[in-house]
Image 1: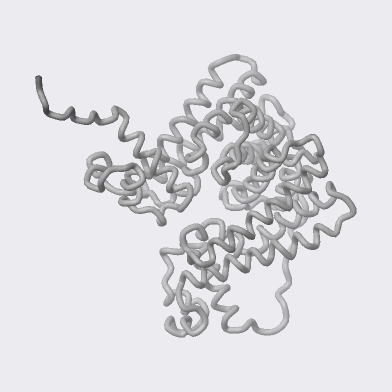
Image 2 (image 1 turned 90 degrees about the horizontal axis):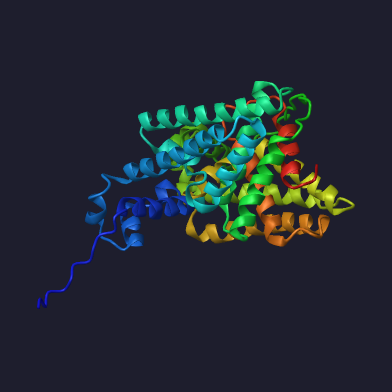
Length: 392
């Protein structure tokens, strides 16, 4: 009888397991905030063991992102093949996408915001395949709502996709069956929404006087981070954009990360001020409408907001992250409190899921190139937020 210890068997789907671990880390920290060693440690293996499955971090991200696209394509194809009746196809599609979001929430929106870190060929492949999926959704919606223009139908489909992706930005859950049905209901409400007539584009008149040097640096950094991303910008680049030598930037900000922290705090201050004004409304429903309008207005008119969303997870210094996270949670809590007061029968967790869906629609579509140049975007996003909140 052998006394040799039995060798531990390697899991048959080790590659998929490692990818799932990586997806969870990418979701929380962003691509640049995760190393191969982080992934290996989280998975309980060594770095060399991970390299037996993936060549590098980009390969892992590509595997995760393209796998998410695969699943979205599969859900779409199965839904269109299940029936000849458009309404039945749509119901199957929404339920399938909601199920996918609930079961794989770590990759629900990863492909959209971490995809730019992939090589050009993979990025092109993601754009091609995701566009084909959205095109299929748009054609289906037009069969159900022939009064829509193709552009408006596509816009609503992007918004519905954001509803499913919203589960990736929070940890709130309800019973699985209810979670799936709630997401499907929210997406259907968005697809059924009536968009307002295009409003005239409003312009912002520059203030009087010359901004301080610190403000000029902050403005330049915000613009460059938004255009190129935090990691592709140097302090020299920021100085040049502000019209000063790179080393002079350090007189105002000790590091690039400190600049990012200042941008995050600026965005938080703008939201807090807008919320304070909205909360002067005479009742909760009116306050929610004003809050939705103020959020969209602040998001579209202040570049600090977009930069904070796209770059803040990794770039903000640790000492600022906790404070900014607290501010963000307090802000969401204001929405949830108003929504539960306006709709007393709505459970708090479902209210929070609705709020996150609404905010994600605005955050996503304001950054989505195929739709963020629409002339009436501010009014349209405000209407979609009200729809997601159940106010329309």
